[in-house]
Length: 343
Image 1 (cartoon, rainbow, N blue to C red):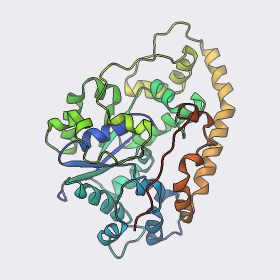
Image 2: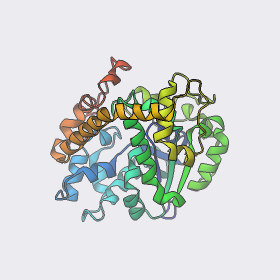
Image 3: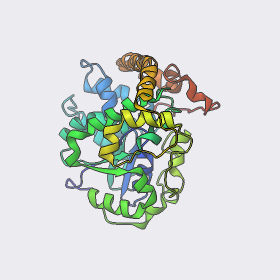
Image 4: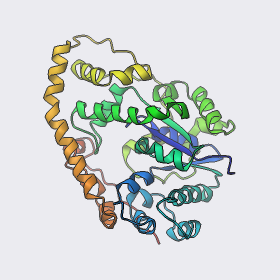
């Protein structure tokens, strides 16, 4: 990779296909996209008084970094000795570049959906960054979020999360390539040609067989919502099977701006509730949504001290238990061992 080939960032609405996009691009013989470094997220969480050196030491303890399987000594050797808070992005660049180099790839990048909140910093640090925004029908995205550890048990909360992510990207719409998951699944070659042209890489058929061309199959947590993206693409059209009409009504109401901006039409469902019924349902979900927001706030405020990141890495799924207790109904035996901290 030369100085004229900027890093690639994959961001997006929650449960929008960012992992699928990552695995497809990483099948290209010149590209490797790391799995959720969360670098800018962790950095934003750290107290302002934490030095760059201290931050990096503690970042090496996070579950995000451990899954990269990189020796910290090599990262330290690649980071400037005068690392400061102003140039902390050079540490991030060293991490994703080293990972790509170890896999024989010249082009590097990162997939972290939550980096939508940090696009100002990303474009400041990497003015020519190639950012891909994944979006998905808000009805299926919100429905999927209900079974995630970090999701809200109520549709209202997940709708607000979805809408917030959209708004974070809006100021950078002219610098970001938007890709709808449904389009990627139904016409993968057309979309991938468009994407590769955007990032500045030549076409390669390998991206159409990402399940067979992964450079590092064990580079992400063994969780079902990640691992499913490693399977061949199911090109069947998404449908709203199993989503009750009253839920569809709520999601379409709260996410009406996303529906319009992303080009999704209202569903034609029988027994669609009226506006009054939908507003009453929104009101009934408000209390639980506020509770969800408070619990999330407690978790994030509780990890502002980087000295706790090693401890949190060992119990990160359990930490989410108060957020959405019902998620274990779908994944009763789920465990996600975190690789040991590296030296």
